[in-house]
Length: 219
Image 1 (spheres, rainbow, N blue to C red):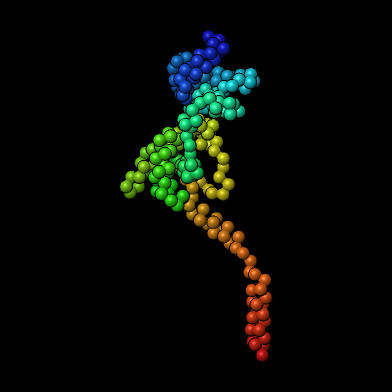
Image 2 (cartoon, one colour):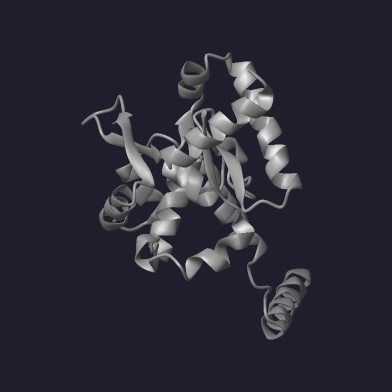
């Protein structure tokens, strides 16, 4: 079968599915290897880019989805019901970012980083299918852990967590968790650097006192 025929089939599958389609599903449908599927889809991506098409194929983990290009969003926004778009508050965005940068994080750890109760924002993010429970932590009480979903990658245009912007200050450990001690140390360092200098009047008074003490010692 010619490659153009395969392209047509894959395009039809992605369009009809309306969701991310796993590469294993495409392999089963077309009876091709994963490398052959990847080669065809990469060629399709190039076609969409060169032909000024309104569509594009994006990677969502180990899957693909057909969607519109970002530059046409303003034209689509007025057509579709705006209520279908998640309305995320600043608190929800903060919580979502913490979970994205800290896979398998617990509710208690989220609240420790934010410093406030996060029950409401977590429930909202679960309702929007932007996060999901990823299991239980091997710790007292077996607290549940959270991670982002494929819907998160689709909405924000990432293929994987590796594409997230690097954190400018805070470090991540081998489990990709924020190192709390480093945050505290850096905050202390920042406080020391930003400490206001002694006012001029106080400096003069301090010098005068020191001179007076030195004079008394000499006498």
